[in-house]
Image: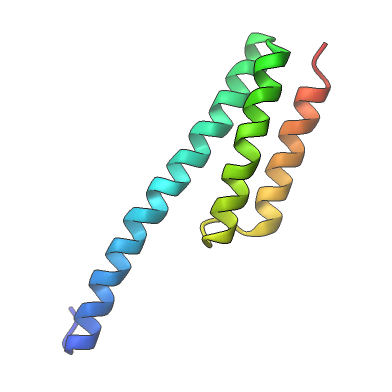
Length: 87
């Protein structure tokens, strides 16, 4: 357990940041899930709209430090590739 006052504060700050980052990660995962649901349903228009909404959400999470830039780029690229491959 934390002994000093600064260590106790650091624990509190870390807990707050963890909650915020969890919320951001959940939001991004929900956006990705919408894209994947549209792809499995075969709805290309919905999938394209969902990708347009998911991409900025991913990059926002990158700027906040939730995801690494390359991870987000890879996920976005794969989603776009799957949507493009739809008939």
